[in-house]
Length: 235
Image (cartoon, rainbow, N blue to C red; front, side):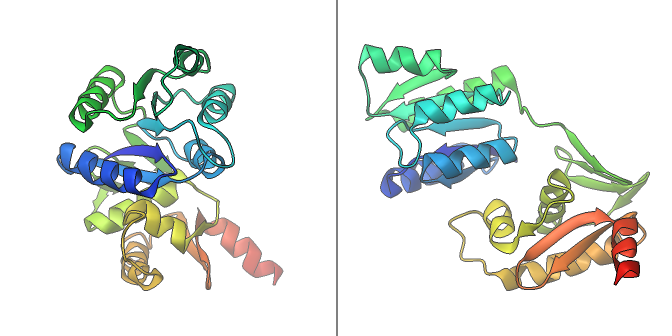
């Protein structure tokens, strides 16, 4: 699955783009939406997306500031500005602050989809093919999980949940964040939808050095069993 971040404050534009692009990607593109510059910047900094679609006139922080901040942090994810601002000054500023392309609204969605395909072909999926945490390895492309050298059988949703936790180890991940990243921000999924996937992941990885810890009412953290055992001894 190719993860693309869309930072756009107009809900109609964001929804239409999300629907069109996910269909254009043949089910392989997942479009995540942020409606302001501050939150969009944090999402882009926390998660390694394959591509960022960035408006300029955003609340909290404008698109130029978001792009400059990403580059200052060493984040080189390709950025396509998608904006109604068309002056030569704005276009040049977009490239100067680290943008890779610039599309002016209104635009052809088919043209945008073609640009995305070209960027993905040129840069590939910038995320690592495999993610490892302790003795667990998730192969993102083959969608397979290994405990040491043994393949572990997980359902697709279970794999996505564990993969996201492995990408953010030792950090408390809220249920809302996990639902938004795995089910999609526009999904009707509720926290109880996580119960069975988490239960089965724990069952299938019970012999692992890693474990999923629950903070009741909030979310989950993937950590080493030794960490949890040490915490239990201190109680």
